[in-house]
Image 1: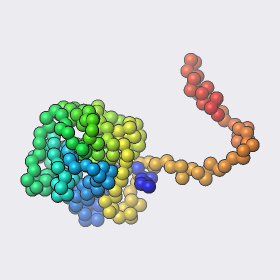
Image 2 (image 1 turned 90 degrees about the vertical axis):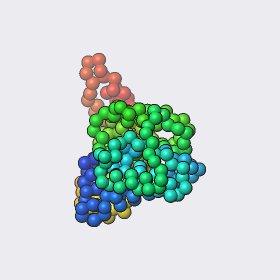
Image 3 (image 1 turned 45 degrees about the vertical axis):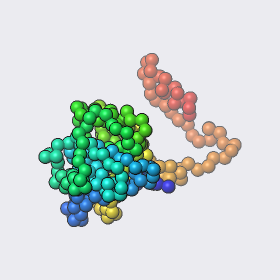
Image 4 (image 1 turned 60 degrees about the horizontal axis):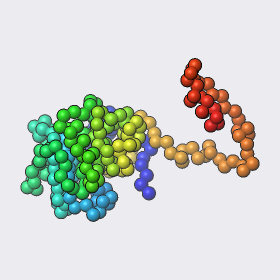
Length: 269
């Protein structure tokens, strides 16, 4: 069974994890990108083993770099790959530009977004990462709408479903509705709050071989609540038990004309 870590992070905290790995543990950004692409492609192949045709949507940031690297690796594995490029290459980070060059070295060329998605088996969403802090507009919004309107293709998002706020789970205008989201280094709290669960699909996590000692030194924003955390407090009750055996509950709430929630709570108790 796939078990996710309990620790949740804000977007700023996951950037700090990334920075610490690169600067203190001397693992390059390009190496992390390659590991992320491999992990995402492995999950894609395990989840949809019959897939032969992959369409990758790449933005201009490092999330797009993961997409270029995944496309490169998929081509080397014999997949038919289409890559839709929405970002401007001259504005890419060094790591993303390096990943793009790796893709170009296969002889394939990026395609411009035409307004619709051609028939494919799997769409890989690498448009926006965890740093999105403004509403999605323009061609990006059109691309996300086209991705969501596909009928047959399954959708895998890298890091987070594009358009979803990594801290709040709020949809920033429009967001990809993923079947699977593959998260790296640290799970963002927005995957589990707000609209996050609706748009993220099944969530997978890979720490990309990050030393466990690093996580012990960095703060988290919150923690996943699991039944295992509370089962010791939920001891079996006698079959003859009565609600009066377990104390009393005082419900204080509501205003004039707004007592419904308080009443429902009291009646449920």
